[in-house]
Image (cartoon, rainbow, N blue to C red; front, top):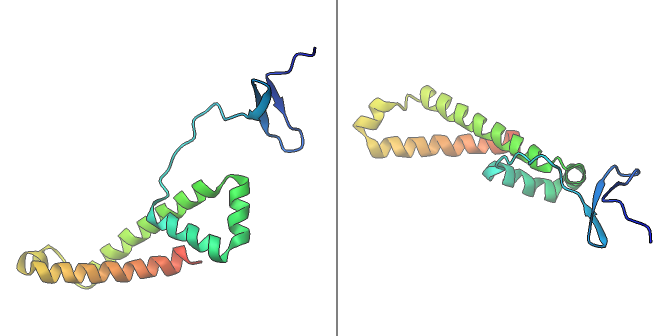
Length: 128
């Protein structure tokens, strides 16, 4: 009886398989994967891709690049949101002095700024 090899590589796909018992299973990478959070923005973009950009979604999924792509989108969106809120608050003179004088007014204005900034991020980063 012929002894089976512990590891084999499919030349067509380049995938590596490991013998476990009587069966070959896809061998995992030896190095642990870096886990980056996808976050709320990545989740929104994922829903958009699945619904409206199926070819892009499928290509990223097959290539194994989807998690990194979504994490990058999330980071870009978070950075853009931070910068927009900061700039809009400065432009509208919503600062610590306003916060001390009128806390409720400050909260209302900051919520308005954040909502407008989120709309911009969705239009410019998420739904493209």
